[in-house]
Amino acid sequence: MDLVLAMIALYIAAGMTVDRIRFSTVLVLAAVSTLFILIKYAAF
Image (cartoon, rainbow, N blue to C red; front, side):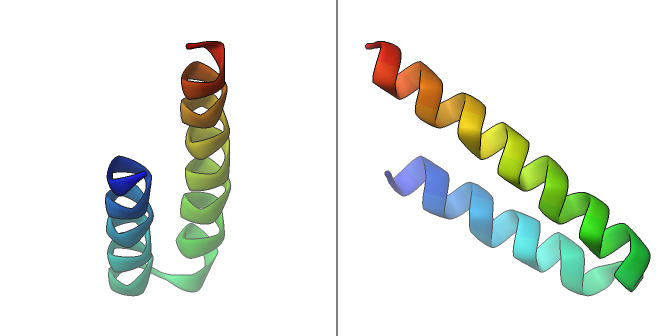
């Protein structure tokens, strides 16, 4: 869980430094990667 929270924090920090258009893209990438991580944890 700590890894997921850390990644979310990184995505938020990255989103604040870029344009709003890129911020939406970062949010989408964050959601997709988070889903993959949750699926991997669920598999185990």
